[in-house]
Image (cartoon, rainbow, N blue to C red):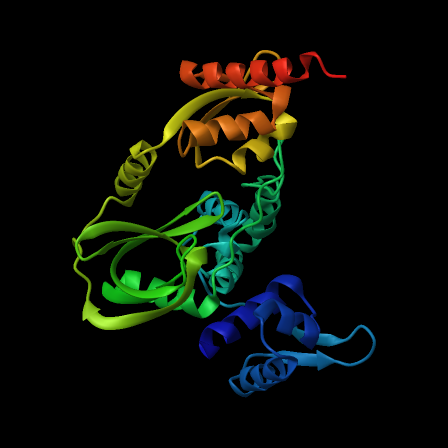
Length: 323
């Protein structure tokens, strides 16, 4: 909405001083022409915005101008700034809203606390791209227009039509009753029911979506955390096998790229990682572990260790009398 954009423009100028039209356009995700129109609107409304010409010119506010936003103390603002410093810009298509909210949070602080809170938030890093063991997989992309429709249907409690591309299937339209949205390791999921049956849809596989006017058939209140745990347990228990593995940290991502899910992880005494990993079945687990050679060892179940040992013996026997 334009009103929110005008407020964000004022807050940008208050917090960062003189800015060019190009910089403002980039921050607000609009064109420079739109920024110039907004500047004119602010001036007409009495906001003291002025332009400076020249190489280092731009737009600025007259010294002393302040918008009045109150109600946050230092620790409350710090908590919000820290929460917004991770991957929140990618959560459920709310990137622009998050950036605008962070500017308002900073501006809501008293002058004496504003710089302190901003500096303190820079000392906290939430969910970085790289950890001590491996690089995080790239986040999954969701079409912006589809995400807006999904978000609206979830919040309004309306039925939702999604054009969904399931694994190894052509995309199909289906109507669901949305319950909530969950994000895990940069992957987003829609929890819903379809014809009364539980369904979980990966957001990156939604090609298009449409909010419907009919009310969704769902409970008025929901414990989303409990519901997610139940769905995970159901998914992992159906025709899957859990495997305890010791793996070279450098091969961790190679292993996880073939697994269905990771249920636990901990460092081992000799520098390796001890992981509890879920595979589709015993054959899948044997294939995945074999690809890693001596960089991974299956500790359990015993049936997997036996099948891997038999496979290794067969290979050794085959090459025992090689020419």
